[in-house]
Amino acid sequence: MYVCICHGITEQQIKESTVDGASSMKCLKTQLAIASTCGKCSHVAKMILDESLLALAEEAKAVA
Ligand code: FES
Image 1 (cartoon, rainbow, N blue to C red):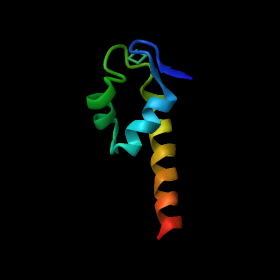
Image 2: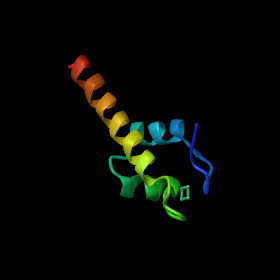
Image 3: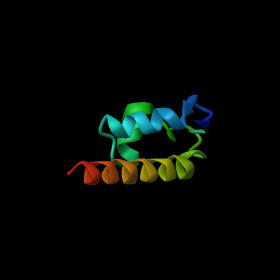
Image 4: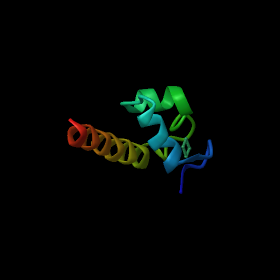
C-alpha cells in the first residue's frame, strides 16, 4: 500500500527502514524523504513506524 503519494513510498519500505535501524520519523525522513513535501502522510507513517518498532521489540524479546 502506498503511504506517501508525493514520494511513492510504501508501507513495506517503512517497515524495511525500521529493520535497517530507523526508530523515529526524523530517521524515516532522512532515509526515505517521507512527509517532507505536503506532510499528509505523516500520521499514517508514524502509525506504521510504531507498529513496526513494536513488532521488532516483540521479536527480540521472543528470541532472548
Ligand atoms: S503524501 Fe507524503 S509528503 Fe505528501
